[in-house]
Length: 259
Image (cartoon, rainbow, N blue to C red; front, side, top):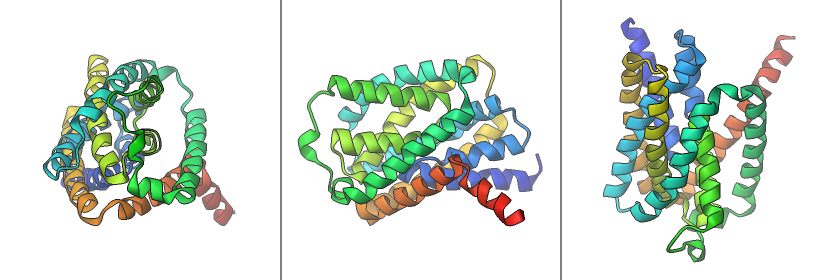
């Protein structure tokens, strides 16, 4: 690859790492870039996990150093997510991606409504829901999210945030910290599945990891400094844009103006 391509991949990684750390759906940036560079969709999906792995190592450590990480809670919730991610990575080729994009887009619309209907809960959390051990319902929720994360990754951070805030009880900053730990855990397991199936292009993946890591480092600092209210607005913007993209709104508008 020539240097402009290296630079483009790093810039895409920075943007994705920043968005993934504060909200999610950063893979909606990097996956199209990897496919545009000539990687088959399944290889792009696997290669994208390399950047995500390094990104979450950086973000998790950054949140831990800032005193925002609930390590015990994050590790307990990681277990069902890891199991789910292995299943999701293995069955990825059998799922209808077009249908799934529409379903995910619809779910993001629902989440967007909750961000406006009950803003205090997102900003302040609801500590009475925090428990010594995850409930059976919580284990099931994170198992299902793990399946999706193992399948395609894009948008998984959004659903993790929703579960961590609305079901577990964290505020958005602490939820982001735990989210990054969980994603780190199940990215390792799902990446191993892609490696076993020879679906990782290591050269471009490691270049992407440079950008993802820089974006994650910056986002973790911003999240702690600016607080949950700022993170909430970032999540609102990301969810709205992601839902519009997944539901084909941008494509529809493009055709409308061209026609």
